[in-house]
Length: 151
Image 1 (cartoon, rainbow, N blue to C red):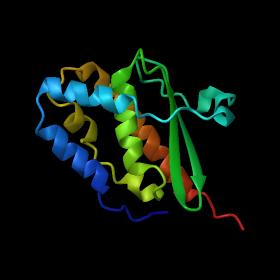
Image 2 (image 1 turned 90 degrees about the vertical axis):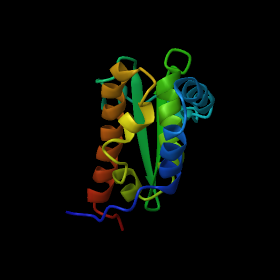
Image 3 (image 1 turned 30 degrees about the horizontal axis):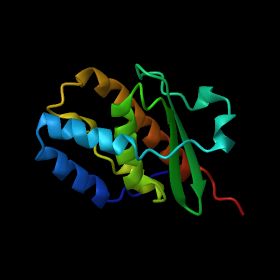
Image 4 (image 1 turned 180 degrees about the vertical axis):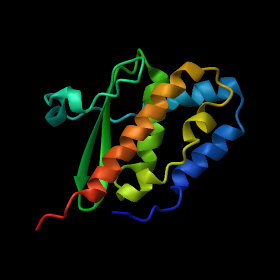
């Protein structure tokens, strides 16, 4: 079933515009700041079987957990922030834009989002994993839309 895709979330647009004007050092500092904002994984999710939530394309272990409530999605991630601050920052930025929004907001993330965010940083090896994370988020959003409404 096709579902309309909404426009790019304004917060993602703002981040992309901000990052486009920054040099490498400023981007790295901004990423470190964002990494500290990643919401911790709730205990109720920590005990789940991780196989369905793992993003195997990532160099570092990353598990993404979606929760759907009242037509909105909320994502959580389990990632070692000290080992992978770039990933934590990227997820914090992305989640700030799409959490508690309808699945269409996640589906509206542009295909070049990762390359635009990471441009000029010199971490191109991370882009495969970051793109895989975005693809996983979009897959969860599409599955939520395709799930029959209960009731």
